[in-house]
Length: 350
Ligand code: SAM
Ligand code: DTB
Ligand code: SF4
Image (cartoon, rainbow, N blue to C red):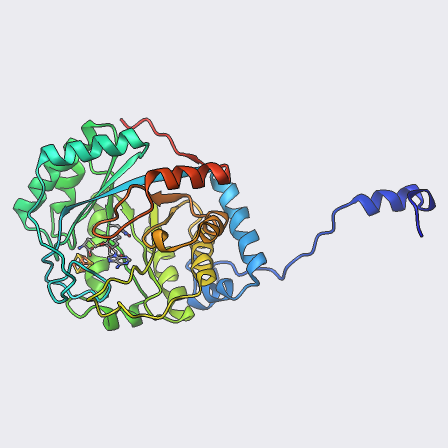
């Protein structure tokens, strides 16, 4: 048996050194065309990394840009529910599918103020209002601008997701104090037509350009688990990462919530580790973005959520409800964060 006294000092020193196993160099954005755009094949190569290499890389990038213990809490409110003319195959709010949802009118200022106050009280710093519109009319935008002023007056960051915007709409929302506009690309360009037929990808890109043009911060992500391939997940992430002039400040990664009555209700389950990989790849390709572990957390184990935080997610939807479906309750989320040594982000909203 070898004891420590049998080993020369230099050997003892080296024996005490941790061993470092270096993975193959990981993919970087292509620069050969003089751009720093991500090629889909390079994003796919990230997806294909051994799981531990992928998570190590994502953790490293995360820690270079963020405090890894801090998680943003964003509360959602459906300010106008159901009756949407679009046919997005995942969505319980489309008129094309019978999901048993009762459509409603746009909520008033008082009810929104109360919801914002409750969210703030519970510790949220961002308040996101969702409306089931294909595209708001001018008078809808004016009414939502009033809701934005109401939310801002409570000292919260304001976000809205209202569908496609026309010229001038983003400016009205900006002048009301809107911080972020959420408009997701949702899937890869070549998968989009299988999920939605009432609009196309370019419509989404046009609205995103209007939001950017008005100087409103962009919240844009997608849904995973709709039957897309890994290559298509990579293509979605590449689209997000390559958005010009910069990638979104906020990137919600939703797991499909299967709602009875929608065409995707019986979609086979995605391997949860593939969802974690998607979070990690989003973190690596969009290092400064808030990557939000979004819809689908209620159906996810705590262990998978913990892996998502390890993979670089640093934001969640917080509060019992998403728009129309459930979300973990506040006590459960506070328990999970405490268990993981994570703490909610605090901002002093101006
Ligand atoms: N109508 C607007 C629009 O589509 O842009 C705003 C509201 S829409 C409900 C906002 C986002 O919710 C969609 O882009 C999609 O990412 C997400 N979403 C809707 N239904 C979902 C589901 N069943 N599972 C996961 N995400 C969903
Ligand atoms: C986003 O990316 N996800 C949120 C928010 N932006 C608007 C919506 C999730 C909706 C999940 C299904 C529902 O509750 O209706
Ligand atoms: Fe309408 Fe938005 Fe739902 Fe599509 S995702 S049906 S646009 S509310």
